[in-house]
Image 1: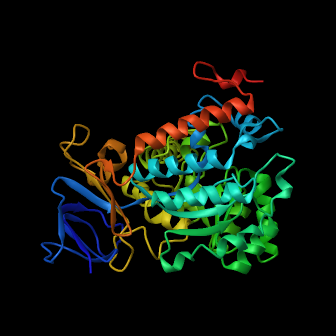
Image 2: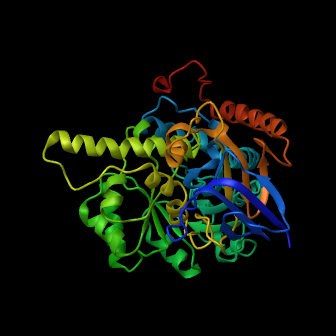
Image 3: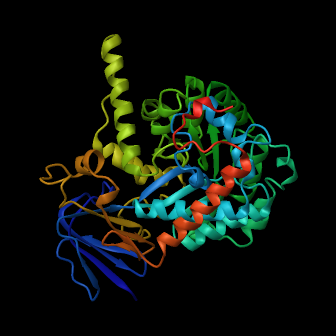
Length: 445
C-alpha cells in the first residue's frame, strides 16, 4: 500500500459533514482519501504543507480543449465573429484541423489545466471530423494524466460532417474506455445541442449528456425533450442564457445540472451569465472555461468572473427597485462551484469534488506564503480573490503527484510547446485566415 500524508495544512474539504481545519492533515492510501484530521500518524511519505491550503482539485465542467492551438485568437471577438470564423464555410479555421493538430492541442491543453490545479475536465471537443481526430484527442488526454469526461461532440457547419459516424462512434470508443463509476481516468459522454437522438443514445448506453442551451429557443427545445422523457439527472446544460422560467423548472424538476462560463459569456456578449437563476432554482452549477481560443483556462479567473457576475445581479436588482430575496454569493459558494458543484456537473461527485474519506485523491496544494496572499485572514477569500496559477504548488490526481514545487512531472513541456507552435502555424496557414498578432479579429473577412 502506498501512503502520502499532507501535514499541517489549512484544509478546505468542501464536505459540510467534515468541515474545515485551520491546521489539519490528509492521509492518502492507494490513491484514495483515507483519513482527515489533526496530528495523524501513518507510515507514509510526508508532504509538509505548512503555510499552504489543501483543497479538492478544480473541475472544469465544459471546455473545448482542441482550441488550444488557437489560444487567444478571438480575444476581441463577439459571438457572431467567433461562430462565423471558426465553423461557418469551408475556410473556417476548425475545419482545417488534422489529427496531429488535435493531438498537440489536447495534450498541451490538458497540461495547462493540470498545471493550473484543474484535475478534471469535461472536454466537449468538437474535433471529431474523422475517427482519427477523435482517437488523437483521446490519446493525448490519456498521455497527459488528467481526469477527463470526453464528450463526443459533432462538428458544425461543414459539409463533410455527416460522413462521420456520429453519434454511433461512441460505441466503438466504449470498447476501450472504462465507465466513470470504476474510477477510470478517462470516461465518455455525448452531446452538443438539445438533440433527441443524442439523448436517446446516451440513455441507452448510460452516459451523461452535455448540451449547449445558448438561448431561449434552445430552452424551448429542451422543454419538448422533457415531454419525450429524455431529461434526467445525467444531463448537464451549458450556458443556459435567457431561459424562461418554464425551462428552469424543467431542468430542476428532472434533476439536471448546469455549467456556467461566466468569463466567455461576458466577453462574447452572449448575455448575462445564469448564475442567479441556477441559485434560485437550486440547480447544481459548475464553472467552466469554454473555448481555449476565447479566454483564460484557469479556475481563478472563472471564480472571480462568477463572483462579480452574481454580485452585479444583486446590485442591479437593488438599484432598480425594492431588494429581492436573493443574497450575495460568498467566496465559499464560488469555491464550491469550482470543486464539488463542478464534480456534480461532470457527474463524478460520488468520486471526486470534496476531501471525503473514500473518494479518489484528486487534490491540490496552494502556496499561501506569497506576495499575493500574506497576511491571510480569510482562507476561501484568499483562493477566490487573491490567488492565481502561480500559487499552485502541488497537484495530485488519483493519489499520483503530477506537479510539485510548481513544476509538472514526467513531461518535457518545452518540447510540447514547440510541437504545438508548429502545428498551430500550419493550421492558420491552411485556413487562409490572417495572422492576427497585431490585428483585431473584428476586421476579418
